[in-house]
Image 1 (spheres, rainbow, N blue to C red):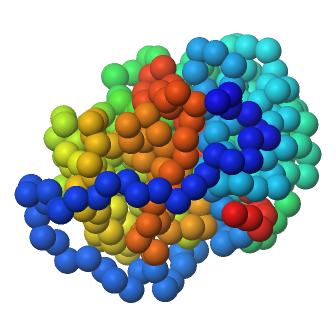
Image 2: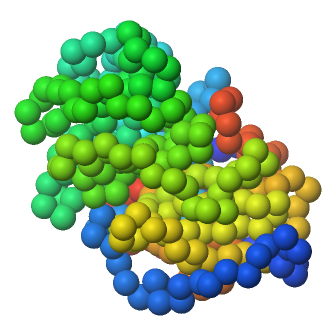
Length: 334
């Protein structure tokens, strides 16, 4: 099967072979009321519809759910500027970058790729970047591009934040010489006016542009260790941390006073390789995993999995294959 934006039969409900809970999954208190409330970060109407797969070959759009917006995603990957790669997306706004600190943007209102001005200082092409949708309740096509730029003239692990604001058409600089440890590329998600990145430490770096404040937060207490896989996600306006311990998936939500609360835990997933979480943003209550060469959405609210077949096999996320989540304002159809 060849990947294309027009494929219509890729999604089906699937049994992921869940077995009894893993022996090493400690019993924790799970907040059972979180599914009834929404956070303040993003409107509910934007839903995760698929991923842009960025690798050494041509861009591919992987539809997680069938939607009427697949044609726009197909147009985006077929018209990506030469030497540019899609690197970030939120609420229908998609960002691509190219060498020589070049950035291109596409919004739901202005869908064609538009080049934005170069930043004041040069940007390495692999720097961490995230987009914040601006405007009243996310309406319109206003946005911020927030880049975590490593300082060339300081100790390793020090960053500054360069911000492009669509309303002014100009770049500006946020907090300078902010110590974080090495920020991981392709780890950024946005939630309200803030962006969040993972570090190698591990820790979570937050920069809130509205407040002009950068912070370093600890990850959830169980998200430590070299064998553990974890990613950040935004769901229903709340920041999540998705951790895979062995073959058990645990989901944590960031609350007041920067406290993490476990909001979901799977049984052990029967698979040959440990699942790999993907960063995602959506109004839905679920996380996305790479498992045995396939992508799937685990729906915590309804307790089921929706699995996506991807040709022979979907490459595992990593340095050679990046999955950029794509959200759209639409009614999904199954």
